[in-house]
Image 1 (cartoon, rainbow, N blue to C red):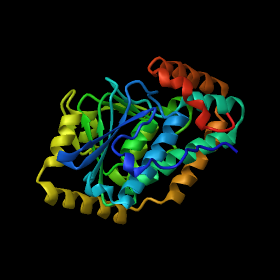
Image 2: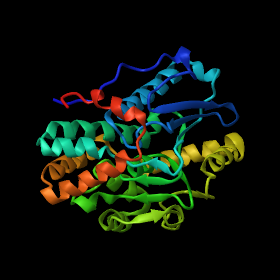
Image 3: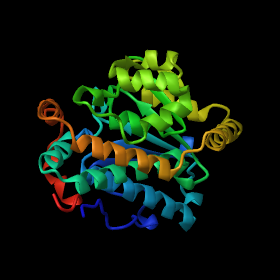
Length: 305
């Protein structure tokens, strides 16, 4: 059985000097925030190693909180961002998908998908910590990257950022949380239009559809996020945290629901036809033109490949 695995949480005593292959970690005292950045030289899709490191980061933040080190490093906001110009993330690792589909390897598809929904669920619950989560998006944010962003409490995006769920192009659907998280934000009718249309939307269009919470100018996502976190200090943070919790209680997301949907995604993906698989492989080549040197080290985190 394929599985995503990692070696356990980082030592809280080493924070903020945690080192990852695919992530850069920053602590900003002035906003009491931890930034989790996709590295500029990392693969710009969710490879198995990146998924393993994101899961490790989640568990490391929980361990940091339990350790009491937050007294030395105040931590009220968790921000996801990216450092590669023009690309936030291209989403799922289509190379892993295509290889598993050609081998008829349903366990690998399921293992990958289960790791993704574990993350999406954790993000949707603010990691079960008393924090507010924020996603600061620039450039292309496609497929699984958009699904991950939608799980955060709030989203700030540059007006010229590009969002999209392209899975319909190869007769699949976004199976790692988009249906659930989009429905919670904008209702089922608009969710179905976005999912089934396969279109690309600008940040401004997403703001007008009320999918995201705030716009930033071109190149301004990080600064806008910092200013947003500084607004009205503790009072605004408490209101945001209360609002995020109210959303969770009024429109609860369960791990079971996400898992059921992703099981359907794996079964659907395993049955796609040859022409759809060839289209996926063309997209793999497009992804590979944008990945960094860390790509070569990604496969070992997914056993049975």
